[in-house]
Image (cartoon, one colour):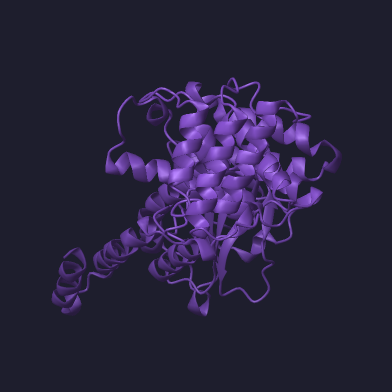
Length: 430
């Protein structure tokens, strides 16, 4: 509606010498188009290009670049550029405190000249400030978020007040978008940086990732130790299935990190005593996708960890999330992780229920296999529990979480039931 109004009004004014007013309306029209771009769910690099194009069109600029502001180290880094013949990618401009102060204090777009370049920009980066003829600081809540830098206009025409007003109008909204993007990236970037540091210290993987697993569970007082236990259960299931040592280590590490996306979930949801409503469930379920995004940017010795982080809530019948995959689409490490995660959830206290007994949890898992869980993985879990029950496990699986109050004969009966279910009376091979 706003766009149609502006177009009609511009047509009405076509015979009137009101260039400045017509440019203002064109800018408002551009803003009405840009609004959906600022809130669209797409990569920030694409949004940056669209924002930059909008400012260049409003200013009549042939060249332009959009920079984001980083505090540590203090510098401007380009995220989009257009029209420049030789601009590095990315371009960066280190800033001294005086530059940061001047950009933050500026009240709008600034036309640069020989006497003002050094006031706002340094020449210590990989791009010469003299390429830019006009800069517009991007600010939000009084803080510097970035800069739009414009180069030449057609015929080297100067930037006049009308163009500067148009740039200011657009940049006040673009500053909010850049600032909001920085806020949403901060947590994930910090987590990723910590993980990347750990990934370089091969000799300290287990202890470092154990510490990280403990930090993941801090939000929820009822799941302290959950990530550590899931890592241990997953590794034990893998061992009972004959998985090689390196793959067992990968299972343990994936278990430690499987819930890493929960760092972005509202704390209040973890303590809710009743069922989550649909909106709350979607927010909680998104931890699989957020976690996948975090670990995908880290180079682990085991390249498939991100699959377990994303898919540990998938189920064999396709009823899980986030991608509703069926058993034949799920790698075995993912199936093991799904079982280890569920087993610990069943046997742990939750705000909405008491923990199940060991026998009750195992009975439920057998009942839901193979519809929900992989039978080989469930069989391997039963093997490890039986070893605990007879005291033959060198490192007990359950000792620090629950008492092993189930008889070996009861575990054998569950294993026989499982074998009969999946084989229909035929010999079942593990």
